[in-house]
Picture (tube, helix red, strand yellow):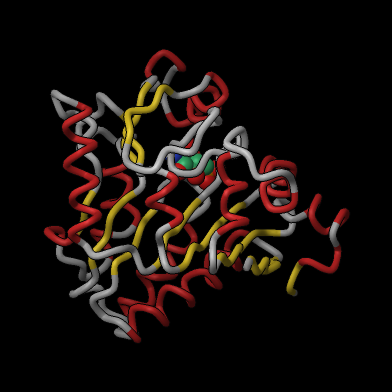
Length: 252
Ligand code: GLP
């Protein structure tokens, strides 16, 4: 079942999403969070850091597993997802870094690293809540459009459209890694709850196709239609096509 919540701005959507995570952390202080990078979750992370600052929540016992990492970037590279997570959340809350997990994009043997990461996720005993953004082409994590849905962590060749989209964060397009390690669709679908964030006009079409179109590995996010519990927090620009085509589907 998918619930789509309307927010006027990306900031409002981030705050609303943070409420869901905060309730879970209060209810289950040692919960397992699946975390995502990208611009969409930044507002949510800011709101969570503020809540932690105010003493409303604590991440001391929380465990986390991130979705993905670029191949070839060290964890101190300012575009690595390890760096992103420290800058946007981990350094701002009281989480124990030993309880955080991100695939190692510098691993000499990426296949072995995928196997290691699968074991990490298994040892966490399942993900209570998985945060997702959505790529312009419908990717979740770095699971690109394909002819099948991968179950576990894999080494992914990034598509030209993803490299183009992510080039904005690098000085030149040539610097964007061409490969990544990504948690698989099966692992994402095993999470007890999924929180999908989408912000901006650029996501309006793909969000509608994912949530109302055919379920196909060509649009990886469309698999979420088969998940048990999905909540979508999006701003009015990202929801524009859905509101036009399926006005009754959005909760205001
Ligand atoms: C990257 C990440 C995805 C993310 C997507 C969208 O490619 N690997 O996990 O969802 O970008 O990012 P944004 O939220 O910046 O649009």
